[in-house]
Image 1 (tube, helix red, strand yellow):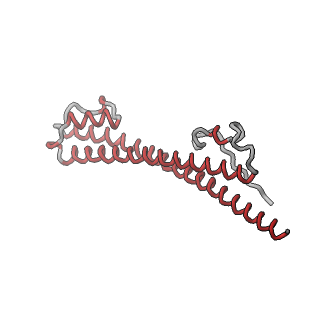
Image 2 (tube, rainbow, N blue to C red):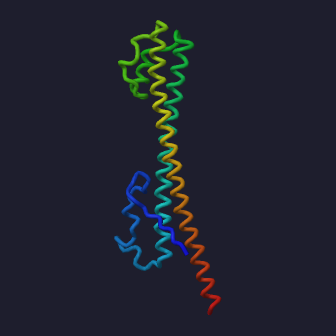
Image 3 (cartoon, rainbow, N blue to C red):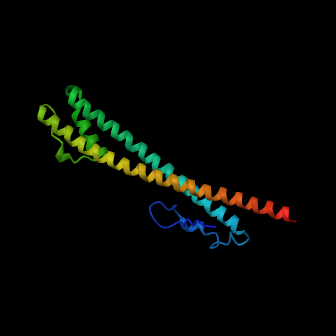
Length: 171
C-alpha cells in the first residue's frame, strides 16, 4: 500500500492564508476524525486555489484588453496614421501600457517616426506575450493543485464509505 502525501507549502502556488488550514490551532478540529480532517483541509485548500485561479484569470483578461488596444494603436499608426490622435495614443501607450516615453517619437508624421512607434509597441507586446504565457502556466498549476485537493477529498470520502460498509458487513 502506498500513501501519497500532498503538503501545502509556502510558495507562489500555496493558498493564501495557508495558516488557516491548520484546524488544530483554533480548536475547530479537536472532534474531527482523521478522515474528516483530511477532507476539511483538502476542501479549504481547493477553495483557496479556486480563488487564486479566478484572480489570475481576471488579471489575464485585463492584460489581454491592454494587448488588444496597443495592437490596434500599432495597426492604425502603420496603416491610417493621419486619423491617429498621437497625443492620446502616446498618453495611453506610456501611461497604461508602460512604454517608456523616450522610445516614442514626438509625432508620427514621418515614416521613420511611425516605424519607431511601431517598434516600441512591438517590444512591449512581446513582453506582454511572455508574461501571458507565464501566467497561463501559473493558472494551469493552480487548477491542477485545486483538482488534486478535490480528488483528495473525494477519495477520502470514498475510502471512509468503503470502510464503513466493510465494518457494517463484519458485524
